[in-house]
Length: 242
Image 1 (cartoon, rainbow, N blue to C red):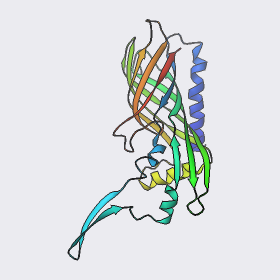
Image 2 (cartoon, helix red, strand yellow; image 1 turned 180 degrees about the vertical axis):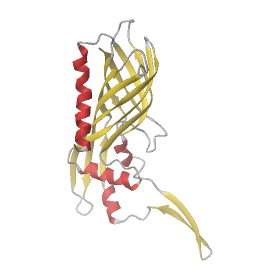
Image 3 (cartoon, helix red, strand yellow; image 1 turned 90 degrees about the horizontal axis):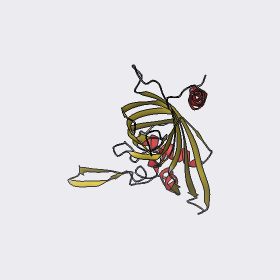
Image 4 (tube, rainbow, N blue to C red; image 1 turned 45 degrees about the horizontal axis):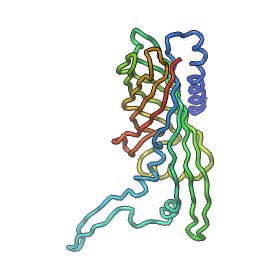
């Protein structure tokens, strides 16, 4: 089975399995959360990569020569930069299943996630001035696991990791940003991934309440802030326990 197809099947299984376990499990092992976040890694081509320049300095015939790499644009560079785009926050839904209340796996939770990303895109023909407007969309599907660092009645703290693939529309925006990311050694090649450095969930209401709010800090295709992940992206929303 092709890797992408296998990932899709595995993700679908992860999303369906909590529903089948719902009637049998009374321990609130199942959680569904919906969130909004900063855009994923695809937006790095719009922000810090497009203006990324490296200064240089050297001596030639007794003179000091200074400048910036990529300052002299070739034709294909001009073409790639002849567009405008408007990024939107990413939307996502995540399903989780806590494995056990005791034993070796008591801190582990299985995850399945779907992420939706959208960008308004204007391609500008540099020779005619014509503008073609598009809306680029893609859906990411991921599976992974969570490590529960602290888990109490009212407060949880955790880290998690997910990986999967993506389904893109035919907008050329994705080709342009993918080429830019590849040029700067950020090779995605259809891969979706997300590292959550730290996540925090707090229960809303009384002890037996199932509703909560959460915030996550991380880096990946679902949400990020910098190309290298030094400053994490943010995802937040509401969650419900079954």
